[in-house]
Length: 213
Ligand code: G3P
Image (cartoon, rainbow, N blue to C red; front, side):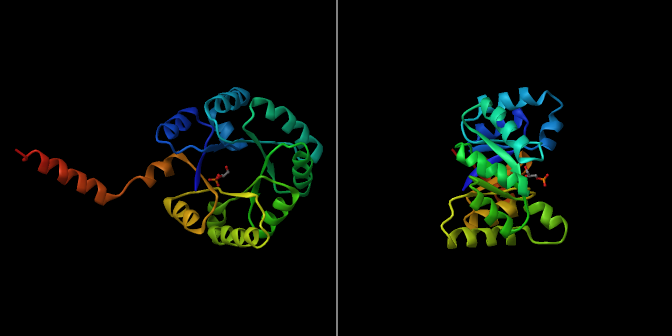
C-alpha cells in the first residue's frame, strides 16, 4: 500500500520523506489555510520537494471554473493531481480533464456509488473520507470495502485513497482490505511505528548489553 501524507506542511513532508513514508501528498483548502503562507508558495515548495503525486484542490464550483483552475495548477509540476469535489459539476470537470490527460482525485466521497461515478467520469483517484463518516456514527471503512468490491467487479483502475485517516486502525484496515493508498496525517504516521513491547524489549536488550563482557 502506498502512503501519502495528508498535509501542506513542508517540515512534516520532509520528516515523512526521511523515513521513506511519502509516496505522495494530499492537500486541501483547510490544510493550506493552516500554513498561514501564500498558497502558491506552499504548492510550489511541495511540488519541488516531492516526486510522487501531489493533490492540489480547486475552489471553483462550476465545471468551467474548475477546469480553468486545473490548467493553472498543473503548472506547479508534472506530478500535480487536481482534487475535485464530488459534485455534478465536479464530475463534468473530471471528464473534461481526463480528455486533456490531466489526472484528478475526486474528494469528499462518502458512498460507494459516488466512487463509482468518479471512476466512470475518468478520475485517476478517489478519496473516501473515513474519519468524517465515523464522526457521524457510520463506519467509514465499510464504504472503502464497498468501493473495493465495485472497482473489482468492473476492473475499474481508479486508485482508492483512504482519506480523513484519524488513527492506526484506519491504516491497518486499509492495508488488510487492499486499498491502493492511505493518505495519513504526520501524527498518525508517527503512531504507526510505536509498540510498548518494542520499547520495553529495547530497554531490556540495552540493559543486558551493559553486563556483557
Ligand atoms: O485531505 C482530506 C482529508 O484527509 C481530510 O481529513 O481529518 O479533515 O477529515 P479530515
